[in-house]
Image: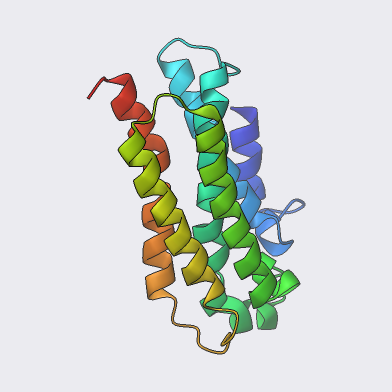
Length: 174
């Protein structure tokens, strides 16, 4: 709970101000992945360091990174003008698109390495979705001046849904 409080308050409040230092995206991804899975485990009476927490939480962390980091693209000029040093402001569009692609790939690979509970058809569908996210993110590189990211956001946000949904359905034996 302490970590969640620090991340939540520290996102915008001094002295931490994660969102102004290029760390806001990481704080959000951590809060919306591992910390949520740990909280869920506590609610059901489990241990926060149970291997299942990491089998679900780490791929989810990497799956959240593309959508949260790419969502800063349309705000690049305004954030720069306001002195807000987001990840996109610090690194630039191309490096963030490459990082988002690598993160989508990492999420996919972690599931393939760790999960024996995913039905094979979901692994195939999730891998295809990962490829879609990677190509969508990398499509921003040759023409970074185009800031319409609707398609990229739809692909990356819907990609996140695989990571909590399939394990929950598998646990419920659907």
